Length: 258
Image (cartoon, rainbow, N blue to C red):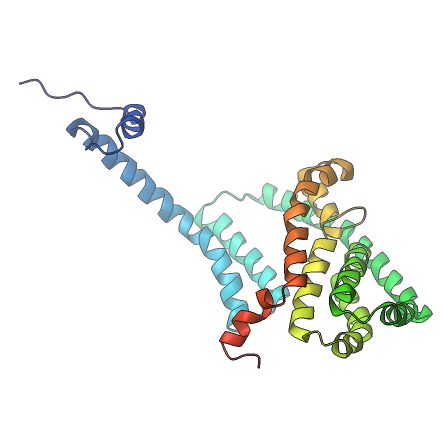
């Protein structure tokens, strides 16, 4: 009796698409075994690299290192994998990667330096305090105040470095927040999301410069590419701003908030 010919991978996919409820022919078994072994080998090979997020998040969760130290740990782990495990990182490539990193970091630090100078100007001229007083005189509706603060934070987050923005604005805005009855945890989440979006949007979002450098595209082209992704971020920001329970429900259920 003639043995059935071996099926190709293409034949197997066509059979699965056309007859999803049918059992595959016996001739498909060797190919399926080969696919299974290939997937197994690729998963094992990728597993050390896939552990990188676990090292970062786990290390910060258990208090082993700060976010900045987590970045260093991730770089060290990537070097170990590239040099000793995968053996794909040569000395020449390591030199090139190092030089590219220095060049990218230097460009970003110039923006950070300018942002720090701008923050010093805001602090010494007391413009932030004057703006906060004007905001409270304008309205005492907490939702309108949150929306106005969103606009302020989106603009400031574009020009100022995140830590500088928090250091300058939190002492100014917190009394207003407490006075109109906004939960500080809710405000903290809103502020963090605002500043994160501020890093992305034009004209001077610092992440734009990093993306432009890595992708080797102009700032204009990078901006046009990032604009569609700002829409869901802004929609999420609006929802979190107007519906505090999106932020506060889970901490309350876990007994972290009263």
